[in-house]
Length: 180
Image 1 (cartoon, rainbow, N blue to C red):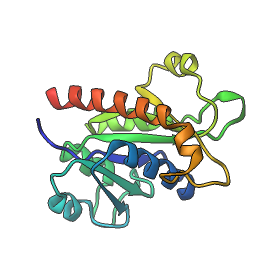
Image 2 (tube, rainbow, N blue to C red):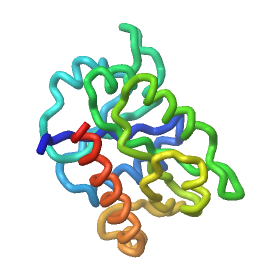
Image 3 (cartoon, rainbow, N blue to C red):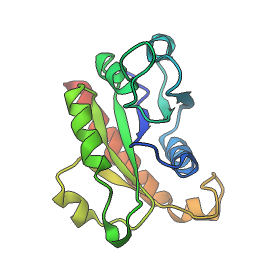
């Protein structure tokens, strides 16, 4: 099996602390190496030196922003065929999610980014509502508010089954992407 380090991409300019907590919790449940890369770094240089390990890479910043040398991180991920996971911060009341999820899925399709799926960060998880939009949702990582989602934290242990389910769905979809 080909070993990939999928990229965790935040949709738009999400508050970094919320995505950091969720990315760290997901990385701990995923296992393997965990790297953090800023969108201010040159994607070509990073992608050339990326280790062929098991694990995840968190991309800080908006991956759709055009780089000074031309192109964006999303374009580079598509060109290099790097599997990616979209993380969407729940920010609207009433259970709705911002249109960023649909917009980023469409952008990933246009740029040929191998999108594994989408993970909702925070808010309440409504699988029926998520299925209705036709997007590749793989689950939900709860938001802990004031506390961190660190390993050993009671909150993380309480929601460990949710993280395990998310990882299960993501790994299954990653396997399908690798077969294409």
